[in-house]
Amino acid sequence: MRELPFHTLAPWLRETFSRSVHRVALDAGSTCPNRDGSKGLGGCIYCDVEGSGSGALRDGFDLTDQLEKGLKRLARRQEPGKPPIGVIAYFQSYTNTYVTTQRLIETLDVVRPYLDRGIVAVSIATRPDCLPEEALDALEALSKHVPVWVEVGLEVADDQRLLDIGRMHTVAEFEESVRRIHARGLMSVGHAILGLPGDGREGARETARVLAEVGCSGIKVHNLMVLKRTQLAAMWKRGDVEVLEPETYVDWLADFVERLHPDQILHRITGDAPIEKRLAPLWEVHKTEIRERLAQTLGDRGTSQGSLYSPSRAPTPT
Ligand code: SF4
Image: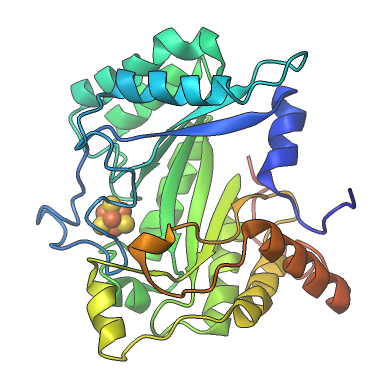
């Protein structure tokens, strides 16, 4: 296999954990301050009613059920003679630290008995403004036993755009949250969306610059997707929103990747919302092909991840 001009997650996981590693997505039944009125109502314009998650809890599966089910599913993929598959327990839905400290500790405790059953990391999704010291204490305590990644959404590095899309936090709050995550010895994964309303190609470049500068360990980036039952869906139906064609997305993605830090790990480079949840775009280009096209585009440009990274102020990713 040829070497890619950017860092993707799978090889990093294989190198770090010496085995194949997969995620089990978990729904801890959290909500979000951007939905219950504390920060906003209705959520970010692109977020569906399941809070970008699986809705498993609503379907009657508690956390232990979800973990057991996920581990069984992965056990069926185990190849004979290969090291046991590693698992990332991924608290995906909503804002997982937007709960009492006691509830967060209880949630994290569900994972502990499974640490010797192949869990190699715990990843927890949240918002930059939902990381009180007590939550970081709980995450830091867990990190003494297993690596902990904290996934925080930036989405776009422009305060006006953040307001327009209903994120209800600022770029500075995102940067501060990442610094506090790193101060606890935890890894951070910063999220970005390319093609948000009003945010063009230069916006994609600026978002990469901010993510590079703050030194997120990992990056998740995808193209804007219009999901059913979102505010964005209404805007799209009115013709107020356009989504990117794959060619444009790959061009912008190449710009984005060129401006990241050379050592940052790309956990995701394209959206993966199922077609039945999606209004647009309807193109189905598999993530492997996006990866290939990105490699081709960077190759044609003679660049690679970090080629346009400016080291002026940026710390190295932790
Ligand atoms: S912060 Fe996350 S969970 Fe909350 S509305 Fe936005 S995308 Fe959805």
